[in-house]
Image (cartoon, rainbow, N blue to C red):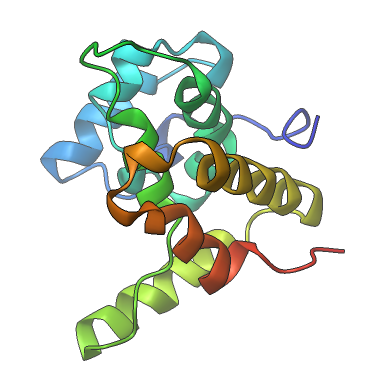
Length: 153
């Protein structure tokens, strides 16, 4: 329910950049589609890290739901770790990472408190249930520790 009122970002605001190859491919694949229409196959071929802020807010539910599915070794099983990775705030260990971290924080701030709580619940589930999908089980834990584990009011 947290994402039910999010509006389609518009054809020109789906990807972070419509000029680079990955962004233009993602924009073309998602153009005119509601997140409910996207298949795991389409999501598998387009990483969410290339979405604009508006695109991320609108299409993230598709990635979260696809991550919840069991794939039994099919080629779509990487949706889960890529989704968690896309929600994990980078370490600020270098100047480049500091800049990227600031950009990520701006991306994450588009979400409402209810959406942030839904994302936190997803990451808690990932941490507790999919430990084999993440080396050392750290990715969901890092995402929660660095940003999403807060009490979003």
